[in-house]
Image (tube, rainbow over all chains, first blue to last red; front, side):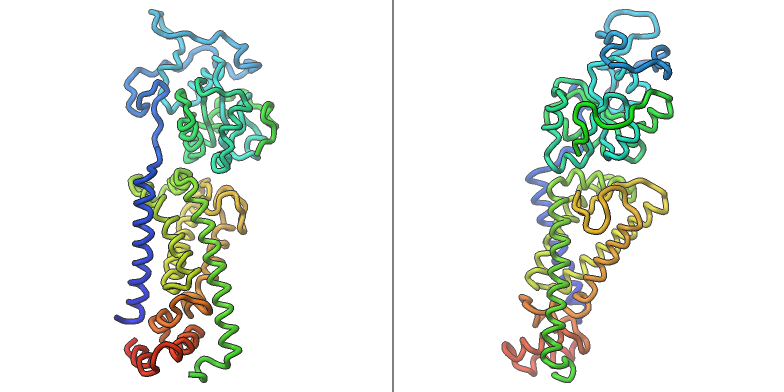
Length: 213
Length: 195
């Protein structure tokens, strides 16, 4: 075999060894790459009707205050109501937009998690959102941070990042799912969508966790 | 042989330089592979963010890339098929550079899945020109090993050099040195002639 042919054959052999090792690794511990729906089902195929976009209560000028101190949290939407239908968080899919995220924020009892880097969080974030950059996952600190923030796995959480192609929110959401969280939403519009809608923005450190990263 | 390989001091220094480059390259890629293997899911989302490959290819790649990096790093440390390992890593670096360029041309914000929080040259965060320079520098580390072989303390410097060297180079000298200990000279010459 020629000089170059030998070298290339060996290079291909090394790649093959890597591929075999990769397959064994994947077969032994395949990662979960999709989120179950907040109700335990697959959100991607959730056929339940989505709520109408809120016609009231989305006034950007409304003071934020404590989300829990806003309007009373909506209860189950099973009762017959004339439109507009009451906001029912359980009817939401995993991926939500800014209007649904804002309704959840107003309803209280929802933890917002900002998966962006710290410098972006400090420049502006959704009020009361926890700073949990995706990097904290690799360091194994996500569980500690959730405990510190008093976020229980039974709570509903909304994770956001920059929207668009940003996948940090998906990564944090999948890790939260591994930790036992079941009511997880991803705001796919992200912080830019929240800002564009004119909703209130908070700057500075995380009021609970501080400058954790 | 000595005319091609230079003096013994030059041979040793050349071999030593190749050894250092080989180990530096192996260390960087072993670290990069380890970071990715700690959380294949994070690397999956990292390469997904580049929006270059179809979805079904991402999960296999999220495992194949770090494992190939690790295997090649191990080959470099041992000096076993080091030239081929350097070529694989060099090719991967070229692909990484092309991928980052495509992201920059599309003006996208994509997190680098390179070294995790460890900043080799560029700070963690969105990929940019710094990452291209970083990969180009790593390619420069790999190039001498691609061209001249593994240098000193290589598992199979003899066979690696015999299959890689067409002319005078440091690994050739290493091969000659090893050959005199392990193989009869005519075998080396005939092998080189065939290549």
